Image (cartoon, rainbow, N blue to C red; front, side, top):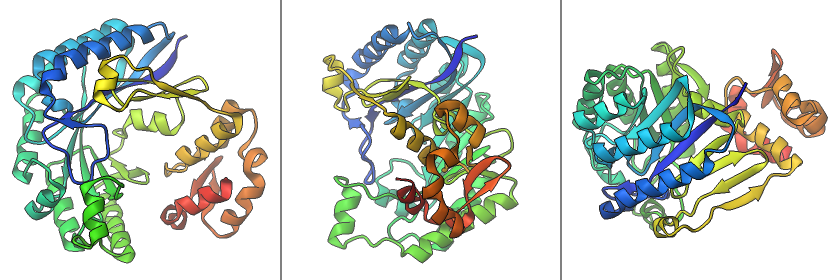
Length: 370
């Protein structure tokens, strides 16, 4: 029986760079789209020797929904020709509200995509403008309705918390409007101000002010409580899903399962090697090789904890022992004494997991493990 792995494809094109974005995305490079798709398919051909079945596909960006339908068709059909997809594979595609069309959505459906993720972020025009998003909330509504008409019933909305000048009441309004669209999944991410972005420059200069720590924690708690009342289960620090709709691709990554990465800046994880393709679009198109890192035994064990503790279920001791040959206590028993005593982590049904208190200070728990 073949092992099951994931597949990530990066589409780096966008209309314009958002104020907070430090991903590999490039505006004004539409002339490179066809060359890029062909380069990705050549890379896929080089990876086709891997003896595995694709359990999940995730197409991210950038803005994948900017690709013309004909190019997306060429990409998806080409990938399916190179790899063996499981019949029930979860296939996700990120879309930006205001860029999707019926023709694009029809292309996705015909080529096996069965899950969409829309970058909604916030309902308020002033916050969308501050983020330099290109859409309105009306376009979020229109895009979700269009997706449903195309036959998609597994839809995620990305929302952001802790934005400059954002208030608790605005988060509440955004949640209400998002829930009215009846998504199956919501991702509620706390803003991380990355160096080199416009957001970082504006915050550092004092022109934009971030909510204080208590307010941001209140925003997060509001999301947890509101979504629980509406039947969503929190399965990871930032992710909430209706029963049966957790993102399988992300869960597999947090469980440290292998995946192939295709495209500029894409990362992959195979065996004990992690690799990243060139983040610069021109370098990728010119054939620059990926950078590879061999993961040591100790690093692998820490990765399992760092990734697994993001999930509310935590890290399975049995799965950890099966992967690494030792139990969690054998590997980290001494380092776990303090966070266990402080009530930051706990054992439950064979899983080590963060407590509610521990979720607020996850990084400090990981520091103890290091």
